[in-house]
Image 1 (tube, rainbow, N blue to C red):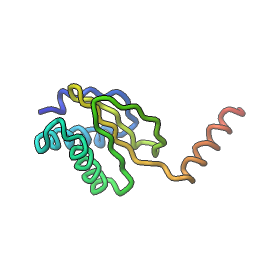
Image 2: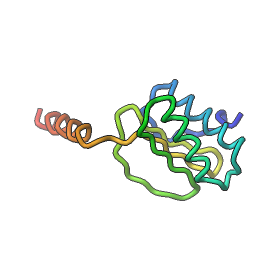
Image 3: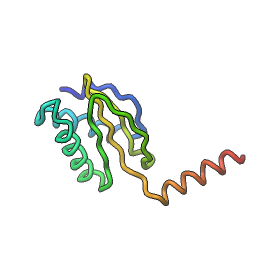
Length: 109
């Protein structure tokens, strides 16, 4: 299976969610050709929306940069061969503000 060949770069997800992400990526690669990045991303995003609630975003490709705001515990970046996959749940304004306030309070102490 391909999830055994995945290399996780960064994550703050629980192990069970990581396992789901890797399994879904492997399943997507069984359905889609590795060159069909949009199809792979759409598949993984829709499955995660169904499993863990809406708001997930997925970026798939061989060469991309990103800088995203995500909900705590909802981020994984991994690669399978030359294909990189970024999966995260976007943070809404109030969550971002709450995180910013916590960071500021931490810096003050």
